[in-house]
Image (tube, rainbow over all chains, first blue to last red; front, top):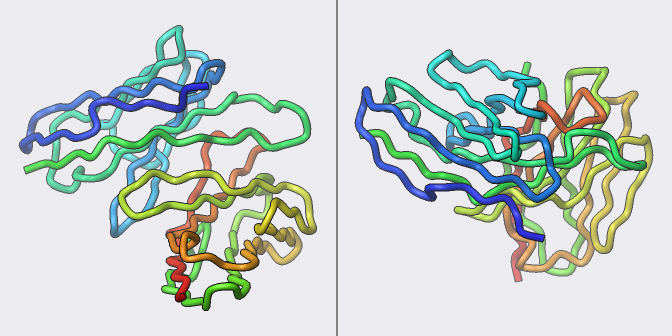
Length: 117
Length: 112
């Protein structure tokens, strides 16, 4: 089974621009979560989408938004980029529902490294 | 107080010894607990998940959960140099994996 894929892998933008990142989940997974990882703040939860609806949201400003399509692919958008938005953006997919006796488990993509100049 | 706390390390362990990684969490209603391993420049990969009190073993790895003490740990037996990585503890308030809160990670170094 193919893993989680993210495109692009690397991006360089300037302050004030906007950016769109894409994530394709594992086949059959309906939940996609987005995280920002920086050396200073670690891995921080941005939001989670399940069946095209935002189900959970972290504490990020409204400049960060996302959406999910009917095929479960998800996009994340950051508008009016700031220098502090430079980070590794990770998406993770999971079934999004309980199955059997184990917790629902997230599997991460390789990430998109965003640099804001 | 951080929601999920880990000692940042580095934790240095000789090859072949047991590495013990610890994590505490603040939300008493937390239900699911995960350990991820992250190599430098790579994305996190799942090692184990646990949601019942007690021990769960998978090969050289054992996860231990104590909900009364709000404590979860990961033991790595027969440590190998390839185990050198950052280990992330993650907690969810739901049986579903949505909205996982991660600790800042513990850097583990296995010395030959």
